[in-house]
Amino acid sequence: IFGPDGFLSDEGPLYLRLQAKIRQAVLDGALKPLEALPPERELAASVGVSRVTVRKALEGLVAEGLIEQRHGSGTFVAPPQRKFQQGLSHLTSFTEDMRARGHATTSQWLDRSIGRVTPEEALRLGLSPGEAVARLSRMRRADATPIVVERACVPAALLPDPAAVDGSLYDAMDRLGHRPVRALQRISAENLGAEDAALLGLPEGAAALCMVRVAFDAGGRPVELTQSHYRGDAYDFVAELTVSS
Ligand code: 16G
Image 1 (cartoon, rainbow, N blue to C red):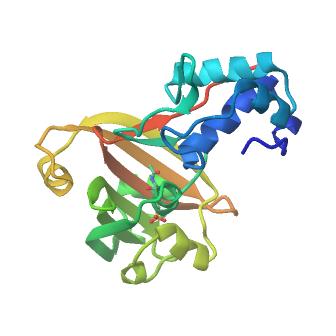
Image 2: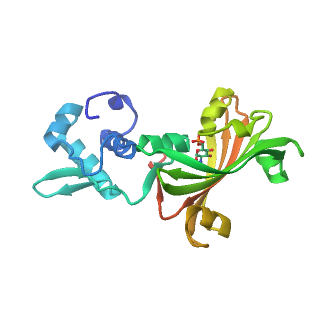
């Protein structure tokens, strides 16, 4: 993690690049909760930057709550998060996100069928009225914990047999040559309705993050419209923000 590999060739101030690299290692689980970071001097030497740069990067990470500095004993990755932390800058699947954190995923399927597209779905997916779509709805767990209720809609021309999707939808779409490579996503706050609350083991009206994703394949074709309700008490979405130049 702390070798002089690659990140020096990226754009932007050095301390921000170092900060981003350590942040990614924490979010990916390469650096574990409570793990000690090398002393400032060592870190500076192994990455090939000045101690001032290291200090500024670490200060930023302390402010983000990702690491903690204890007087006299050093710098540590913050204790385990009560919540899952999920970046917002990479297009990943739920299976990949959870695997990177060492969690196994299971699903309780609610629907895997072919139906007719609704007018709203037709607009978002660029389909004609009445075209067939595959619907895949499920409650997904990380280990034993219910995390999200997902309702996906995929043109049936691309996914004619939704019942064959067992684990990862993105793996299935990859095999069919339509792996999503770009997505637009909207996040809003919602209170869970009775059905989703029951599936997630929460009281009706509990806080949720609603994400609506439209994903496109390499050819620019919309291939997925998915609405996800993440339980608000289990998930944090984290994004890196920069000033536009
Ligand atoms: C994520 C996506 C969802 C996608 C799913 C595929 C968000 C908000 N949603 O949950 O749109 O369908 O991953 O995961 O990130 P899978 O390949 O594990 O089935």
